[in-house]
Image (cartoon, rainbow, N blue to C red; front, side, top):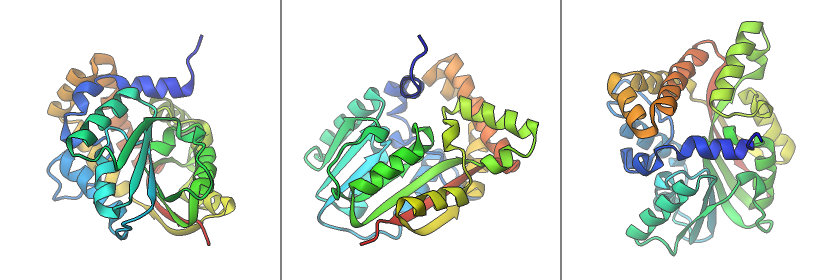
Length: 280
């Protein structure tokens, strides 16, 4: 029997997680790259700082962090926004177990609660959260639209949605057969349902249709994919990927890294930062 999309995503991220959680501070994002960026750790730190730079400390309320991975970004969110509580969720059990241990070591277990949960099946009471924050995960969700609708319901009035996400632009993909084949292959390797293929403009329109007020909608592809692709095609990075994930997954990750740079150059893939608010 063919396993579900969610199980496939979990299996993809589970390989080597016991090692990967100890590397680069436990970050999993693509990072934000510039000419001065020397390491992956610098890139991922730059991305989370970029996402949170306009936010102020709450000293109250609650945050939902989806696709939290090993919890590295979650801790940064806590340090910046200072809520009373963060509920951080992820599909991958090994991610959650590592994140729980990390929170315990930082004496944050009473403030950050990590749970294995599908972001498309959240069932929190309406008006629960001041923020819903996701770093890249929604591209995997089945579907992104379903998650966004549930996030809207879970947010309080004036609550904030912060997202960075991988974009496969369906308008560009449909221009010719070659683009369709490349788009399909890339999305398949990255476990991105076709329902999630949309341009940044289409994603913004979807948010407005759901009821959000979109305050920022920025393309960051040129600051993400070239640097990430170049870094992961270095021999040291390929060797680390194989040692961490095994030959099959390690080589697949290397291919994906090359593909992301290639499809970005063809304008098939982009990377978006969004800030949207649930109106009062």
